[in-house]
Image (cartoon, rainbow over the protein chains, first blue to last red):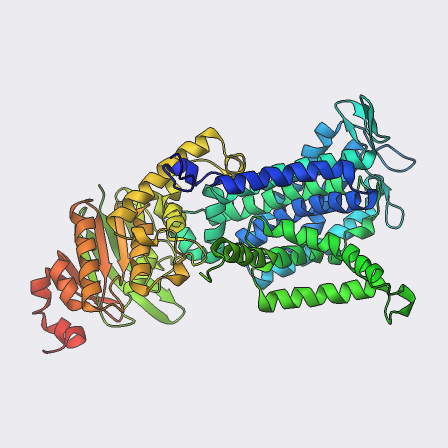
Length: 367
Length: 253
């Protein structure tokens, strides 16, 4: 209806990704801004942002299974690892003791996600029958099995302590590792990675939003809120829990395939328990069961060390004058943040954003 | 239209016998009530029908199908929907979402189409929304459409739960104490909805409730349970005169 853009006149419009013009324009402004950062930000910030985008993809994955379907999963890092090594084998260079096929990114990226999803489905017969703490323990066991496998499959992973090179950036047959010349402008490798990650991140985010507004997303939330009622309503909870695990691993795999191309190499010891817990922390801090939460959480997690360093720099505090080293301080503060979010704002950063938004929507009135 | 049949069903939990040799048949399009004191096994009967419990002995059949060994979601797929005694709504979701979940079995696309939101997805979502809106309209809960379940009063939650079950478009509707904890006015409302569902939508209804005025008013047939055994079955006016029922449950007024 003209002149009243916020009045819904059909159901399609109401269930659209952006239900009003404000949201739509903000989305496009943010996307344009993010793309422009590629050409203006310093190398360090481009690195941080790229990591954030890839982290959010993995966190969105965990959010499907833990946030929406409500199943504890402490092994998300394991699935990320599966994605990393699948892509490394398919897209990496063969070395003295590792295999690699140097395939195109168009192959290794989707296959990395699909392999992780298949592994998720393979363990599904166990995971769908358990819930709560028992499920937590099974996934915990998976982390240890995973790191054992990663350390010992030397032809695939290079073995503990050594590691291997990850997939090469080869898109449509063109190697992009040393940058790419477009007309007069030379795109550096980190800029190319940034653009790829940003695009993937946008696509995955839209996918999550689609999931939430349709049948599967509702079924996941139903299982979270009451599995007996969900079953009595006609939801096959085994199938949906399994698909939640598979989808979640798919996102993890995609993220893992890209993540280590930033540094170029990966060592099996990376995928330990702490690595998996980080994703749980990101989802909790960002806001479990929300679309934007994991994005906020991933940005918070990646930017956090940089912000602390920035603060130290601004207040001219030397690192030597601190009682603890920087890494320790970061970890302590991060732990404090997790605890305080759980106590004061269970909806995480998304909850804070939601309240701020509603406050300014109604401003200057209090409701 | 098929009838729902219990054939000598016994349900045991260890040494406790929850149901002992219970048989009955609910004919299509009837309004069948099950009454009895607390712990008599009324909800156990519902749980046996909807596949949450598996009877130790005996058979439960729906039309041609033996539903004894089916999973709850398979039973729901056959067209048997239920509500719960202690409301089991999805609390962190809106009324609309809850009712849309009820329409789950009318949509046939998987998680991947969900992710991509294809044309087919869009079309079926629209169809589901139409079903949901009709139910919202029928139950007069329009103003609560976007409210979260946790923020709603008890009576409305009960109504939403009936709506969620209706969204399955079931043949048989199992209502577990729909009027529990309600005042007279709300009970009257619920009774009116039950009669409408029964007469206008033509659904078979099995009702469990403690509100004798309502049960005797609207039920076509009543079964009385006591300690897991069937005490009596018949028309409401016969049941109120049955001396065994008066002794066990109704009391002398």
